[in-house]
Image 1: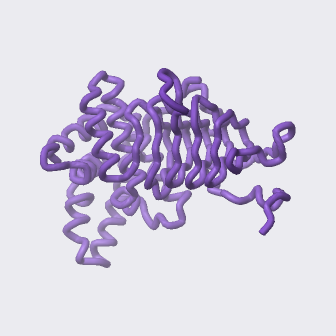
Image 2: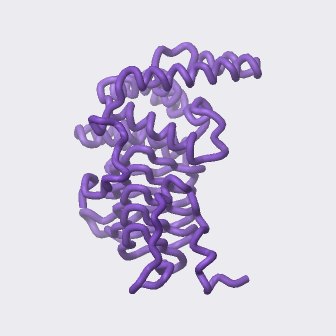
Length: 295
């Protein structure tokens, strides 16, 4: 299954050309972010210098994001100036990466009640930052610049505790909520509008080579600590409960819970939902009709 085959019409990109935003849309969001930063600098003078250097001194979202990532991921031997140039050149030359960053910012702002502003996500959400760095590493991987892609992958893992192989394909509007301990393997595919919580593993089952990691459809919600192993398909709009272990395919619009995971409603007639759990973030709606859950 390819990334394109995972897309569901109701969850496709809202932008007409499917991959890029207009310059006005990018500029509007960036102006909004700068307005948030000015407000925060006025209300908390101790942050004024930080907000100026990371947001207010920059002319665009890609410049701010590149500067911030470069400073976050640099080391004594991997200089921030080198990383800044790498990120800026990549974001500036690929409008789909900029559109994905905007979609990810919107996802965090809408889905996470703890996200108080777009600027808060841009500066402080390590899941968002790890995902944007991964997008650059993935582009490098596809351009056969693999040593650099792997070096960037290593720094993201060290700094953010998020381990996404540069070969993995990640859609837009993705929320890595908390993000600590997320592991995504080389041949994994994550669709659009997916929400993944901390300590989730999308891994392989052993030493097999080739296409060996999960394929996550659009609109999927994966709860904290869930483990999905092997080249399995999680259908669009499915929900994987926290702590579940999934080793086989999960049908679209169903809920899988437990270790080993079982479908709510049973394998023959699983209960289906109309919501998009990746956007609603509803983790527990199945419990009211799950008779086995007794305390």
